[in-house]
Picture 1 (cartoon, rainbow, N blue to C red):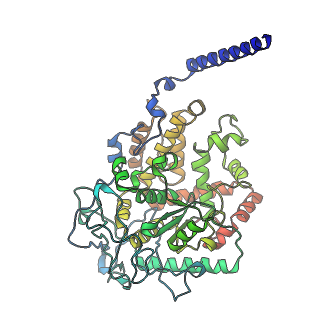
Picture 2: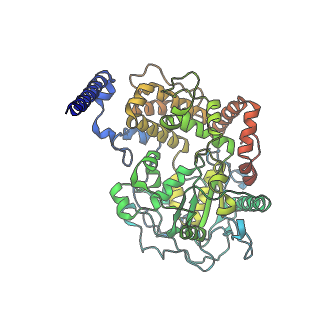
Picture 3: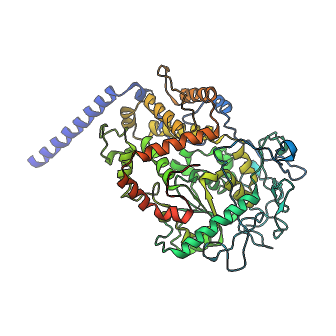
Length: 548
């Protein structure tokens, strides 16, 4: 009896301590804590309905979102390049996603071509379909998909027809119109001819470049013993006969948006209110269950067979730039603070608040560890095993995505992508993503560790480092509030006040990359080159700082 009484006293004592702690915590929390509503604790839906951004900001910030299916049009629309004086092709200003090109490459004799003997498709042939074959999934329905749903699997007529090159040197697909009626889409109330689009990338040039990449990687695979397998996620869309091997920090968010959207059923798309892949935010992709991707496991025989039957896509990036990008997004900003950040021994920062992680500390921490965000591509998606038929580069993102989407008769996705400013879209999504983390996860940790003003300053600094925002743009210290909406408004103002050309933006980024890596000791740089040596060799990157 006495023992029970003592146990009861201990329970009452512990409960009292817990109750007092909760009362004291609530009394000493910031005003922001009291003002938060239960809705803001919910995971955000499409367009972040629980933490809305002023719609006017999106409109003036050029975040153009599609609103419905394409109107029926009388025939294919071909956008020809503008002509300069003397009939020569006028030069377009460079875009950060526009540095070169990419796409499928011409098929070789049976048994040759592609890594590991896989044939490489001809330009203009639908993805996954050989001459005289229709891609799996059957023909599309007789009209545009209702409610903005993903289009049905494409079917082309004369699949074996050769690539036709126009008089201006542009490749024209003579059997698959640029805007095929069954699956084409555009904003409501507009037709393709009304859009002020840049000329499409030169398919002939990207055809040659893609052939060079595939042949180069195949040759390296034949010479080297690459021990790794395919450990990362492979997304498969059987209806498009298309698969993508995920490599974080190498355009993976872009492809996750595309695959997530195309994997939706019509009723799902309608109920969620999305009509474009680019309405699915990075936060939605990472943290909500509504956008589960069509994942396959390369280790199971059935999934492996599905993958190897499809047209396989792999995107890569200069190893040093990928490593640097991971630092900015995951360690300099908030993403990994509650996991890796708390376990790191950082200089000049409270161990309970890793807001001052340096690039050197990040490198020392990640080099001996395996994580998909910084692991070499060969440890995630060994090209000698995955045998990609398309190797895209982040450095040539616009051209490569155009080529892939064209082969899959998904030209409308490229059209939507091309009407947005990539820099503005990336900045907006990054602001929303980090403010969502700051507001929802580990509330007391983030709000006691980092103020909204400090978060805005970090985002501002990142935008300058990656070349999206001019180095002359300054975040004011006297703003009345530094919430998501006011920061976006100020960013929009500074973005227009200090315009930065893509060429100068890229130069600004390369300068920052070089500065950070040159600050590392030579033995550390030697370890980095050793860790990523296989990536440098397999994908033809120079073992030096990126220069273009």
